[in-house]
Image (cartoon, rainbow, N blue to C red; front, side, top):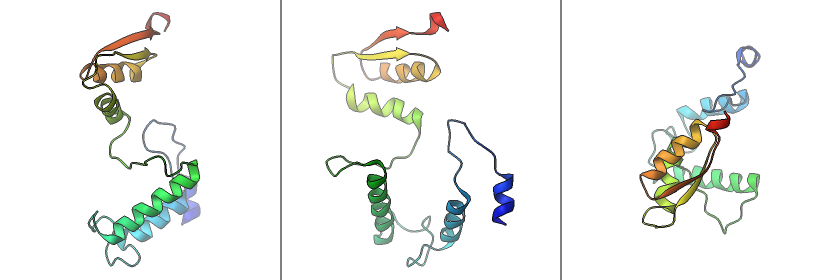
Length: 133
């Protein structure tokens, strides 16, 4: 079955979720019904439970090792994607400040980020590629 699935898989270059290796999907499938030791699926247990916290701590430790981030930095697992970051960044770094955030507009994503930032404080466009696009 794995060979058939691997043969049917597409190559995905979209900005959204990435294609995962078949062995990863198989493990997720197997543990989706019952997280080992929990007696329930990860989808069915509380995010405050010791089983969920253990999964989260293991994921954080593995990510720290993979990307070389020490304990002096926090790792946050957040919902949302790029569009959510367009609002979270100015909410946390721009709100209530008088100094303008500087933006480089190179296309759709830059324009989207700028529009979100305008909701939180002053902005300045320091380069706009539109005239040259």
